[in-house]
Amino acid sequence: MAFGKWVSLAAAASLVLGLAGAAQASSIGPHGSKAARTVRVSAAAPTGCGFVASVPADRFKGIPVFNAAEAAKPYTVKLHTDQGLIAFQALTAAAPCTTFSFKFLASQQYFNRTHCHRLTTQGIFVLQCGDPTGTGSGGPGYSFNDENLTGATYPAGTVAMANAGPNTNGSQFFFVWKDTTLPPDYTPFGRVTQGMAVLEKIAAAGDDSQNGPGDGFPTLPVDISSVTVNSAGSR
Image 1 (spheres, rainbow, N blue to C red):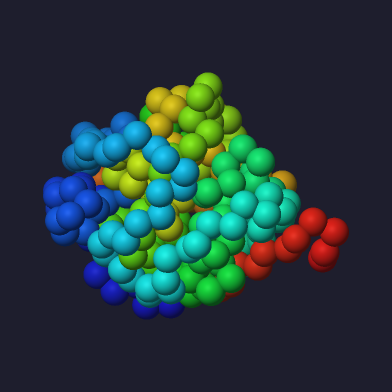
Image 2: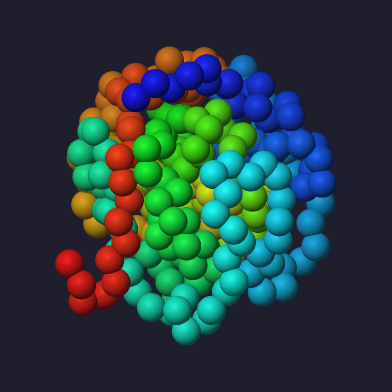
């Protein structure tokens, strides 16, 4: 897969201008010495899911219309990557808006033929994916509110949202491959059920440190060929 030119998260973060401005960089902090900190933007207190149009709109598939009955239905996710299968259980009860959004995008094949663009191996231990541009600043054309943050922790196997500040969730998410300490700012919405060995293999191969020591593009390219969603009881 041709990656094209990949802009470092440090450079992407410098473009953050707020929801009404240019593209925002979704990330997880703290960063290495060369990467900018996560930029906070002012946001109103969450009211419902808060799905609203925002920029950028890469591979735009529309804006979800929340349906509580559909959102409550349990499901699992399988990411088919060239490094192996990674599967997780969606936390639909704890994070209904986030899991509804993820299912919406996956059903539209939004994540197909994308790659995970950031690996951290010092300080925090995550693999970040979900940006169709592969730059760290791409998004689906809408944002929505945080949830499930009270007492949030990030042990190995957590799946959570990357963001550019409060209530700026889009399409980017991350896997925690080793127990990690983060502030409760990133919505946890899944638990890995298969593929921890795959994540650990990717982490063991390291990164190119373009954002700072232990923070950059994964040495082992993680191309996502497809993402499948399976409802409870289906295979």
